[in-house]
Length: 360
Image 1 (spheres, one colour):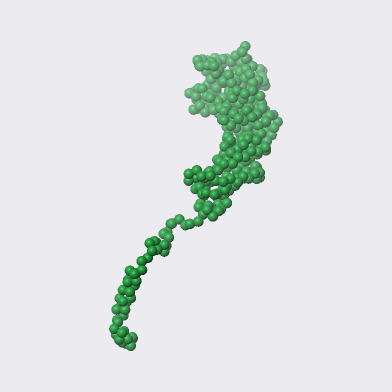
Image 2: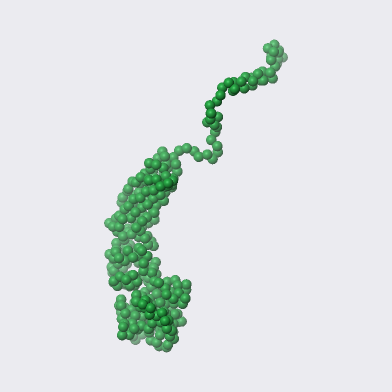
């Protein structure tokens, strides 16, 4: 150590002096060489949280047109449109839309994504000659510009419209579901039985179609538009029954004007018309009486809401409100003594609200 100090002194430089000289030289070099603009920034590390470079992410949604109902349905042979949106839009991307009927792929359709501001749009259409449960599935395969993503549509039931007594299939089940959603008294079995026929007749009465136990394209078209609901006239009556003699239907109404059930009925024929006005059920007799009346709910004199073997699609009774015998027990269970019964015609009959509390 003593020798090194001797050399430093011999060279005329102390250790501290050597460091000072080195720093001075570096400063002079920096002044002499100008760094290009942005050179320092180019060598600066990426700040935490900064977006990495690479393919853009993506998300997609599908919407369907020409479908309706609860659950969704469309008619066999009708063209369904699938509209898709992609966020964000990236130029040059392709979506492949596959159509699956009862879980089996039946068609594919590649389509380019078109710009719509910051969002991409596309649309394809599909039709089938077969009934069943349909779903559309869209796929974007990963590219250098955008990541992979997928989307699925809701399920849609494709139905045959030509349905009549004895038919048993998913189209019948959907018909029943649509009528049930509108509060018609109908079984949910997938079998076109007598109860389905009576509910369908009541629906046809409400929408002004021929009064037959058959479903066709006109029925499904009206169901798709949400037609056929019962219009409550006297919601202020709380829990009550309304009989529309023009439509020849009878409806049970819950408090607040909520429709509970709708039934087909046959009221009094022109020579023995049903009395119009506001009444109350004053007596109930279960079972069948000597006149063939089943589960009777009397609302004025000897007139009652009751089951009967013959319930034509037109007014044919002696003044009572006939309903099909299979419907009579459920109506009898719902109606109570004191339940208001509002009977009217759509041409204004019944608006005077005649009251009667007569005996049998």
